[in-house]
Length: 216
Image 1: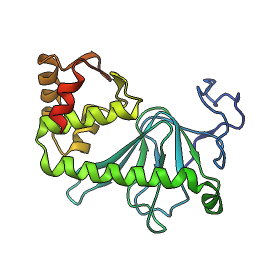
Image 2 (image 1 turned 30 degrees about the vertical axis):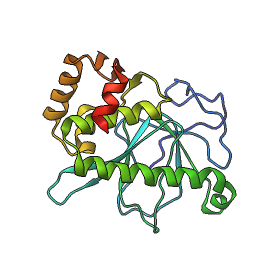
Image 3 (image 1 turned 135 degrees about the vertical axis):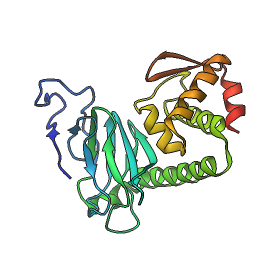
Image 4 (image 1 turned 90 degrees about the horizontal axis):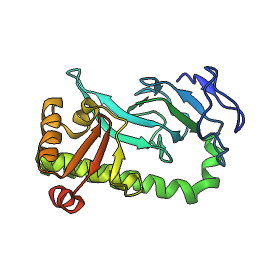
């Protein structure tokens, strides 16, 4: 794991001269480290160095399959904690989707001090993983995309206009679909007036109830 640039104080600029939008101290976590888009945070099989918290930006967790395909298991957005492992090594790759700031829990001994914060985060991650398996196993392409959009909305505070830092290819690899299928579903939902696509990485939910019914 290679940390690229670290913020030392709430007002320290990163080395490029651009100041982080959110670098306030977070109890038990180190200063923010900046990862440009596409930068690896840790690798599958690498020794686990603790937990991480997304300060801004977004993270994808993925595994490379034997045939070379990529399966994304989770996305983590600002405020979310990731890196929970059952053993001493990482089972997935973690990579910054966009310009991302991450804090690492100082050391393993601190984990016991923050059980009240870490336990709910771990349980929430488990529930999301279980729901993701249900989406992959039982729903068609439209239902999978609808479930993904409702999940993204809920994780962004229930907003009807949501930001999608991930690409259509990322979404496809997360939902077990092809990028062509994901693009067709987005177009279909837009034509039905269920969503609007004001920008490439933004989705506006026009008919929330209809979207929820598709995801059910």
